[in-house]
Length: 141
Image 1: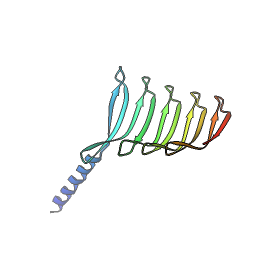
Image 2: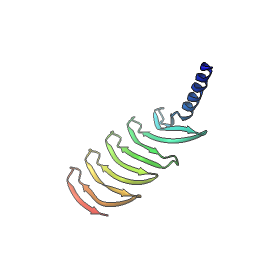
Image 3: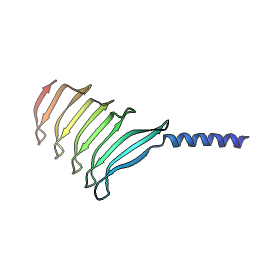
Image 4: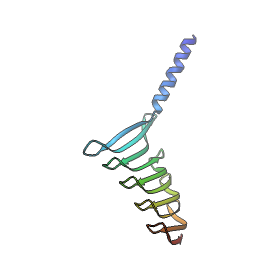
């Protein structure tokens, strides 16, 4: 009887794990077959749910990456990079709306501007810089 109970529990654990496992799928490729878009999914109640995405330039550098909520809206950190691999921008999202810190950079890696969003609207003090990293302007929203 102990063996049967153990077997039943093992099967239940296996089925549960199989149903919630994450799958990374290459949805688009470049002409040479290298990855262009890779999406991570999970399955809940026989429904495929998109968890995150990554896009790559032809040279293999990561172009963007970000996560989604269960409704398919941007949620969490979203990061974009230049073809060189240098950070281009980063922003936080909550259920499809920009929320919190956001920053954009020059290709040389220096900060271009930064500020905050609240419900997808610019708020508070924003700072703007030249390509050398010198503060050139502040705006209040």
